[in-house]
Length: 225
Image (cartoon, rainbow, N blue to C red):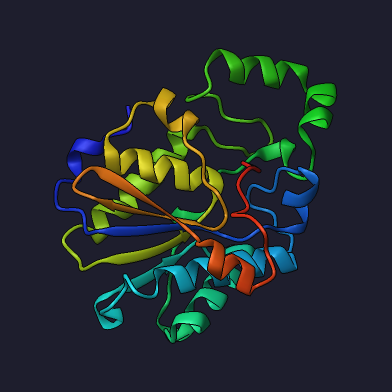
């Protein structure tokens, strides 16, 4: 269970994913390790920040929260600079970090399947509850820590949140009361924002105009790692 019913007083959340990283580009699982943003990743964050500018009209009303991992720190720094928000005002919280992928971190899916076929079978059998060996988490573990964070921010003003592909999907699902099966179907593009309010989510993609302005031809859809 995602425990969404406990969060009826949630603020509006504008949820973002960090930009493309070097490991995203080659399909390596990052988890709680890090690789730096690519130039594409920086452009993705710039484009979605500029797309959101007309909609975030009262910047002083927003709190900005972020995972403390390097790729989200880089991304939220770019986002803040684009919108004139002080980076010093960003709240960093470990509970927003990506799922810990344990011994899968740094490997591609093909490498994981070759080295740890039993892991792959176990996750396929019980994807929500399977904790990856070597210090990894289950999706249920991620939901638990995100629910704890949501309890702490309930009743506050609107929030901007810089997270990850996995933790972002779970956070969106918890806020919407989605089932695990629905959460697994979510996509978290790297130049898209999800505005979550009253249990529903509105998708805002970076516009072609703003993507082209930073030298990108598309919205960076795709990689889920």
